[in-house]
Length: 175
Image 1 (cartoon, rainbow, N blue to C red):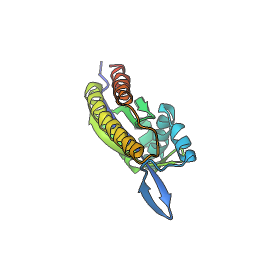
Image 2: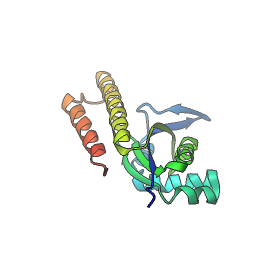
Image 3: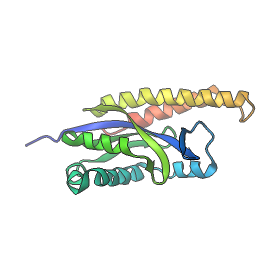
Image 4: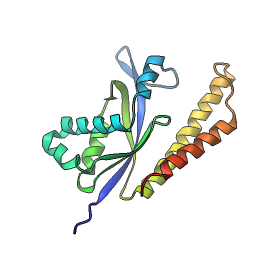
């Protein structure tokens, strides 16, 4: 019997807005409508989106090769990070489809592939490391906004709670 081999792809959605035809990175200035679009993204919408992207970029034959083993193992709306499992022989198609994307569910973004691994354990470690970096950067932005008087000062306990929650969510993925 042949063992099915997979690759695990750790990715991040990086939001963008269009202002007078120029795309710029979103640094906490998002409108409430834009944040609502961001909140509507889930593991299910990511899976449907990847299916559509593979069909768009690689046609029916590419979709047939990839879609049987495609699964979104993890997605966090707070950090916009996720892990996708794909067949080993065709993981490049999934990675290319993610990289070529410009929007997910009318949410303007680009997708950055952080790590590709043969085991979910290594991908989890990379996701936890990257998640920590993103959460600490978010906390620093919150502190800067609080110093400017735009928002109330967040406590260090909020940072610790987010780090623990993120690590536990990623670590509980089925092995």
